[in-house]
Length: 322
Image 1 (cartoon, one colour):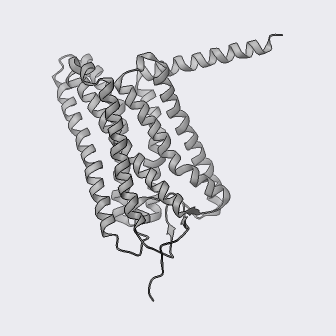
Image 2: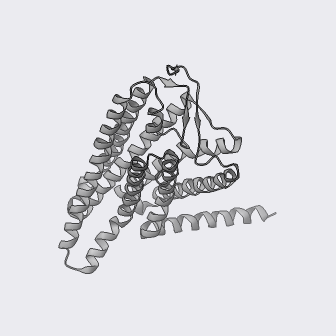
């Protein structure tokens, strides 16, 4: 029998993480909690960097952009998953699926590029400290963030456009909780050779070059730290990039682990569960890593929360006055 092509399909079905009815309430509560913690934590980081003049530096400018990207990143997938669980529906429209896939690819690439830019910032700060303020000027910082957005958007647009050319069969079930590029591509009945080539080329050029750039930056950073004579100086230099190194390890470790394991096992359901690590867990943990390992962020958050507490106390006191 010839396969049934449907180029005018109106919807896909997201199978989610589990089809067990008794697990749906647990998954809803778990992901709602993780989503709220992620949004609140990253908003606090952004608010702290904006409100505290001591944090108006390139490093924290890039950090606030990373926090904003993480909020958007997790908001691309989790709310739709929560709606599907609550309404007991697996449906996502064709337009909605393509849009979700496009935004997800954009923000995933943006995260990778911003982490690379932050590694370059730490490289200049530690290896060329006397030229840091001149090199990392506000203009250059703005251009680096703008270039990251543009490169991510172009990659996302290319990936999405070639998916639009595909013809799909009537079997439109996606064994995932969001429209992941690879999963959507391999539902097609038409030839996906071009899609696969662009996908792998993008992964090598965008992900691979970013990773090489980060590794090179830290190679130079470690060499410079070894050249410092005092132990206190070494500790101070390393502490400025410890949080970033932790986030990089978490982001690349989880994403590479997911894709390598899925390539080895070919189990879509287990791949969907493992992808929770880099799509939800990593954006949730980033604010904790930066706030717990960074004294400047902890002090800024403390000052911000104290100001809010004092304002709240004053406001309540005024309301009680006759």
